[in-house]
Length: 139
Ligand code: FES
Image (cartoon, rainbow, N blue to C red; front, side, top):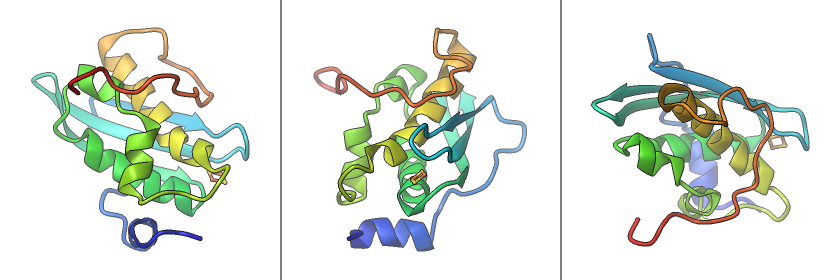
């Protein structure tokens, strides 16, 4: 049911916790279950230097948030906005059917945090958007 990669991140998450004095922090909910995930980021010189998460969510949400922190660290704000849920799922080695919203919730929180430091319409959103497009060519 769960991949070895997903189970490893569920049992041994690397990035759970908070960032002290974060540049931005955002919490988003998964509308299908009511669970929530918080992402804290520290931004230095336009790039994410640290990302941490906390969630009241399932194994997929925990593993996805952990994977997302890895994917986001080192990315510029602009590049991180284009991270796609498929990239998160790939790091996890796949997820069970009909669980994409669990993997997307951390991404929605990251985007809200990014928009709160850079400005944009997603600041303050409380729902999980369905990504419609992947990252731009060459990303
Ligand atoms: Fe709630 Fe997965 S079932 S986040």
